[in-house]
Image 1 (cartoon, rainbow, N blue to C red):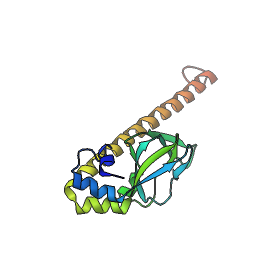
Image 2 (image 1 turned 60 degrees about the horizontal axis):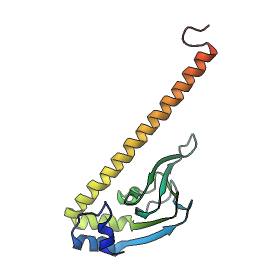
Image 3 (image 1 turned 45 degrees about the horizontal axis):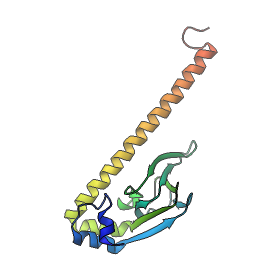
Image 4 (image 1 turned 90 degrees about the horizontal axis):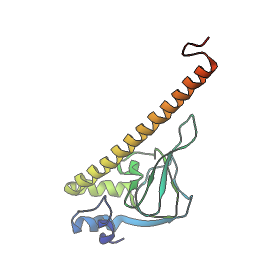
Length: 168
């Protein structure tokens, strides 16, 4: 992985050449087939990923229901940020919706570079925070719409049974 390749990705865009070279030294390219699991929810969080091409679905498996696709990550998008934050396990699974090439960086190496080069680390962590905030926001919106849909279904069922809205 060259520093020029990294410079094209949003997480690394605009960084100085020497900083890009530091990250490219620890970055690896991985390839996955369609429907191939990259990591599962609850697995040890050891790498941060950025998509070069393809599409990766992020799926959350609640304890009381079916898996939910939280988002689909495309070129330049990142996932597996639990490792970058030093968390022990991934909070969701990552599964390829299409064949994918990704850049991976081991979490401890990523954190070490950010700590040893704080000026660059701040920029990278801010970008990571934007992604996390966006993901959490879209997840909350999705949960709200599912809750509203479920509640509407309960109300409609109750109304048709005559137990709400002036029925029996």
